Length: 158
Image 1 (cartoon, rainbow, N blue to C red):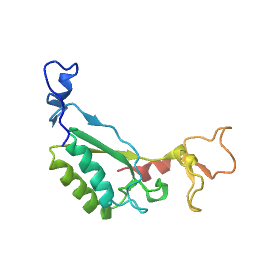
Image 2: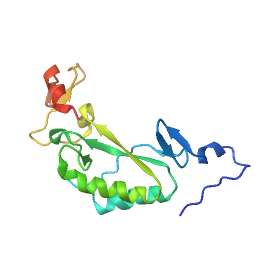
Image 3: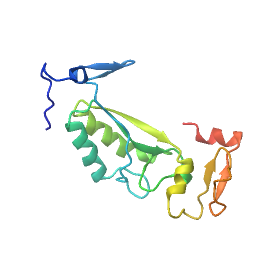
Image 4: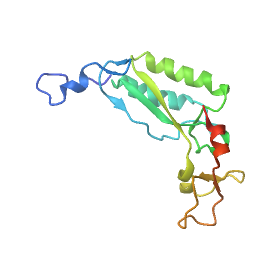
């Protein structure tokens, strides 16, 4: 386990003191920002590799881990990102949370709709469109864009 220097000589001692975010109590003030890691499987489920990745970070002493993005819609998943659009994902995510909690580390998720990030993919699955608030001149006509309508927003409520 990584040992953090909490001596009185350090410049950042407050980082290692307990803190709160609203009613959430944290063992220190170190928060791991969400980062894509492509460690979920191709359907969006938690893998053993993903569990080892987050376990190592929890053991390192961070107080709060914000996971990589979690897709809220099957049709708009980034490859190898986590999914949370139906109950089948709960057992794997529960295992992740339980394992991280063993280190007295809290977990939050980053809910995400990829939108224009899908333009970074070299190819899209044939059934996928890139949902956007508006089409602009910079958007290539070679990509399948669809402007979201007000009615579409209700589909993404969690």
